[in-house]
Image 1 (cartoon, helix red, strand yellow):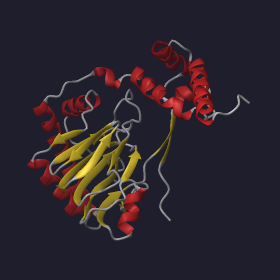
Image 2 (spheres, helix red, strand yellow):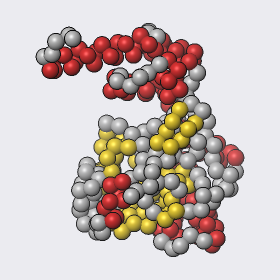
Image 3 (tube, helix red, strand yellow):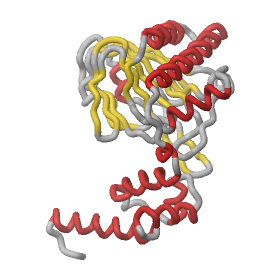
Image 4 (cartoon, one colour):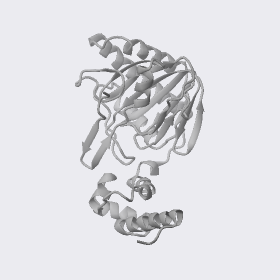
Length: 299
């Protein structure tokens, strides 16, 4: 039986982490070589609960042939980096698909729905890590792990580059390739004190290399990407597909990590309706669609 997904009972809602079940099954079937160190329900070898707790999973897979299991649309509980060292993969974020090639680095945030494979997974060697910085929504403040040694100014710069820019695919350099290969050597061995030291070192080096990469490209930054209004806008765009749930004003607001008054303010600004009025509109629109599709009666 697979481990249960991690459930977060935060101040403003409940969040469930993806468990990469297709990857777990492919590994069990001998289709993929996998090595990873994990916290929670990800596939791999568990780390001690109090050690590098924010590092939810770090590792790699090595697929020696094309296969059709794919990681369908999902979210993660932290900032996810993946690096394709060999082969090719289809990668999608929101409505856009990116054909990954050797040397591509991807960056996704917890609110970015993404997919790996379509569902074909090509022969590939893929590295990844998911680092929990305490955010589930775009407007929330980031809290980096205490075991990072980057200077406060460097972490502030990295945070700004990741919050105010959401380009998902980058061309990485040799330094990032080398660091992921060093990480692979650590996660392939039983986790001990020496492994913890080396893993901590390599993750710090990787974040420095990531900061250097982003600084070199100097991407355009958009502060509106990290606002509470964007959080509400994203939620309202998904609400028509969830009108069957027993929503109340408090649960609508909590899902966005906001108080009722603030959520109502942004909802009115975006829709010119109160949250309950907008919910009723979505439910009427859904009912109309079902009646037209099924040619049913109003009752």
